[in-house]
Length: 140
Length: 140
Length: 140
Image 1 (cartoon, each protein chain N blue to C red):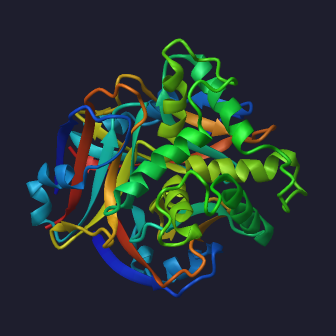
Image 2: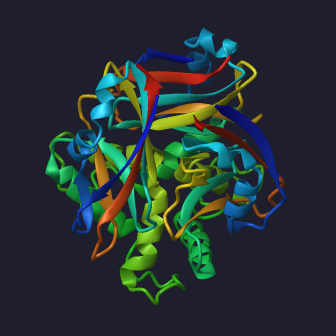
């Protein structure tokens, strides 16, 4: 079984945001799979996806602080500066975290660990709506 | 063909550990696939998976040194501190390296390069047993 | 449908290089898939793959500058030094960016965003030819 759908996320402020519920809600087809994989792909180069702690909001704020520190806006070494101080840093953060997630499906549900959630990582000051392509495959 | 199984890794000390043999040993079904993919997913947010050099133990020690330097325990910028100095750093390392691997299968074997091995990256001082979900799919 | 093929990339200088066209050109089978996934795997531990901006060459130069700054050649903390100053740094960069990409396929084409391209990230001073294993699966 193959299923693919687009999910447009509304604009989010710069930072790390839980999107597990929105992704699952876009995929009623999940329920029909016994074993499978869900691939989530963000079609942008200044936002990214990761999996991390799904409960404490301070964890997500610390992600933002860490990445701002390790990849600073407007770093003096950057040559690509014409799109704003946050642009080149956003590209690098996007590759450090990556544009896609592959997640196991088991008995009709995402087989995440108890503390795992999906994050949208918005690296621009003025993030636009972000397009995700969800691809689901597996065995009924 | 779809196959899914859980592999519980015994507790490992903080650091980077080769787990290629354990993963392959848990998957006798690999031998029956001509072309396929193996997806390995760790169901935790303070340990991660990567692929790197499979021979020299000093490479794995240098991974630990680098990540401790670039994401220091107890960094002054962290707000999420109540679970210990190593906790928030562990979450960030886990996302930098990622919770999953997708690996090609060819002629009944993982099609890794000559020097590639699978690493468990244990980011906590007292790592617990870690649960991996292995999902194998392909063509016999 | 499953298809797997090897793509040998000619040696590239150290740095970040667009390889989207070469990968797509190696996969005429893409055209026959309505929905699917392409998995690209690099069989090396001192080069890696990522997705990022496909137009401005200064973005790719800034990637090289950032990673050289955050993972410096010959860092004093490294123990694994016998293969040259660039070797251990290359291993770490390879794991930060990762050895594989999973990309959605839709209507016979890679479903990348408008600005997304595939990068070969060559982390060695004298990069050799690099072997990619391309695995394509999906529904006609």
